[in-house]
Image (cartoon, rainbow, N blue to C red; front, side, top):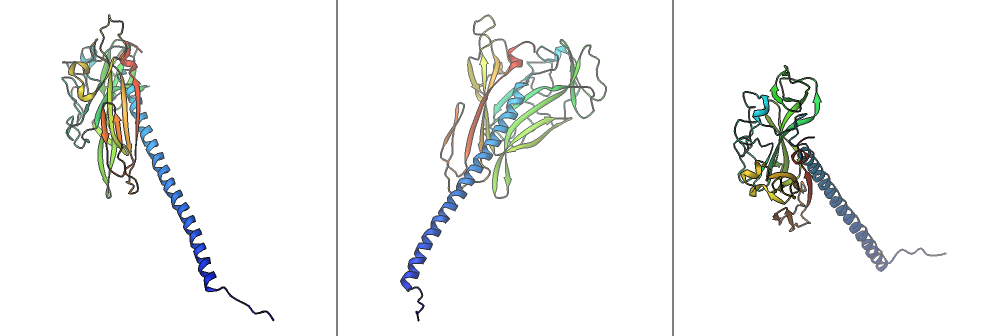
Length: 319
């Protein structure tokens, strides 16, 4: 009769050692896959947020200075009517004529920006992030309307004249179309979300007043370089960008868009940052936002996006 024998103590220890080694290998593969998946998800989110921000800003820039059927430069002298009072919470940029509607003095700034040096700017913003940029556009929303309401401002225009108004009574302008009049502002603010501070891209929009809403989380900085044509109309280089200048280096005459200082393009820089830090990652990179290098030493992942937008409404006299 055969005797049954169990494992010896040595065999048990060898089996445990082999099993532990196999388990450690499987666990390391699992942890590695999980870390890779988290990194991939984070960079996917950065790509989505950064490209979306770039798309929103580019779309507004492409249509900046569009006034419906009117083909000239918008100013008070060519307008049949302008609202008697400004919207509540009006945002006013630098310069003599940089409110919501054209005034009777100075060049009306349909495009303007600045690098933020104080969180309180434009008389309507109290939480702007210092060192990032703010930019504003004034234009007609590019879809003709048939009706107007008391909750919005409108511009009705033909090739040579226009009126800006609010209310349900539409002014008479021959051979004209009706458009929504809009004033958009973009800037960065920081929001406290739990134990974390998250940078957010804000959009200001004109109804009967300026209202601001967060539109994209994780946008840490925006910066703009303005492409100037510094040649006079009789110069062979007229109509071509000669240099790109940041907002903090722009002069009053360059914003005022004279014949020898036209803004023909804008270079956009968007720095996207992960919402949450990663303790296993250290970011000591330098990101060049045009003429501004920015260096970090923290645990956030980042991606830099940039694009150049041609301002077609600034480069031609009609569309």
